[in-house]
Image 1 (cartoon, rainbow, N blue to C red):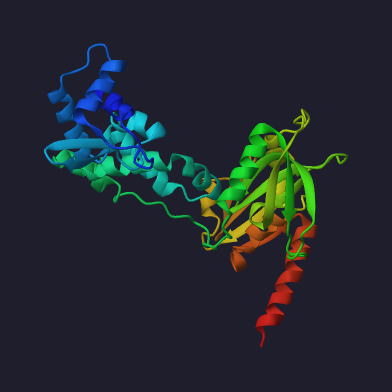
Image 2 (image 1 turned 90 degrees about the horizontal axis):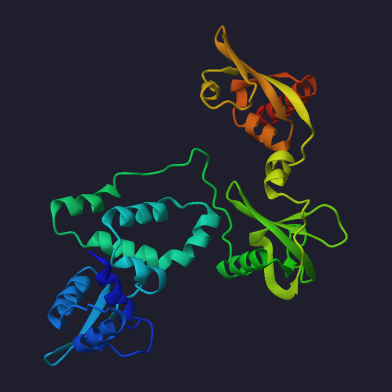
Length: 339
């Protein structure tokens, strides 16, 4: 494939438009207008036939004449790159689409849907054994997430698009938000969109409110209605999303400050921490039949959820207040299961 294929596609009408197909001589004439050394009609015809086999163009036969237009999904960026897309690039796009399991990448990828279609067609057309290997490779790689799979609420694609546009253009956003405590709410409020964050399968809009110093988190799936306003706002220089997420630890939920966490794991439950430490200053050592680990962390609800996931295979040694808290929980849990 060379750049001529891309130029041929560029002069063809789109499949989803009302434009008529172009005959081979008409395609050749358009090429002459953009290419000083345009190939002869027979060469154009051969290239069109080849592109049809690869799924990039569609053909309609009228008597002895052949008429052409772009194939479905070969417009825009796809039209510019489809004809010169290598099988390596098509495979990379296929894998990207297959492994985009998080909500934000999935929603953003909708803008590339035509490009994904072209990549799929590129892989489907396999003549030689080497070409067929690319198709089979896609079936030889898988990704599985370690956590228990929950079915998170889906986000309306239209709402995501409007929120994204308001965020990009720094325009005020009018929303109707329905938290769990008020699922019938119909009151509108105006916020300043500052960022989008995905945490554990849920997507949050970080929104500021004029006159208030601290932003608020809004679950995107709980937005009933959104409207981008004509009024713009000045993005606050003092706000840094990365700092909000990583330094202020807003998504750790109810952060209580730094503590030195001391744990004892049994039955190999904490062995993965030897390769993936929970703290920069983590120290770990084997003591008898258990693994003792300690490090500096932020005490939060998220930390508690993580510790509870190990059940009876982790003992909280310190801090003392957290140990006492888990001891009370263990007693309460034991009472539940006594009967």
